[in-house]
Length: 125
Image (cartoon, rainbow, N blue to C red):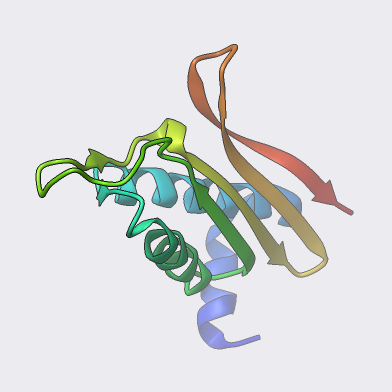
């Protein structure tokens, strides 16, 4: 463990499991608050998905990040025909590992809530 890791660990007054959940929440917030509003159309979705995944992967404790964007639109008619990325367009799964704890966090638009919910879908052990 590096001295930076030790110093960071000293600051947390919680369990390893609670810290892993905290870190997962930060990553979900990053996806939403950094990228909502980004101009999008069908031509840049794959690049935007990869950019979001790669930006999350450089953060501490991230094991994997998968992002899918659904804009449900056809090809652009002209230069003015694009959308701004909204939370309900994003499906994301991020796995965080701190020591022996792995947390899977997800963001999904839930129609019954009319809301892009971020939640912990798995914690192990």
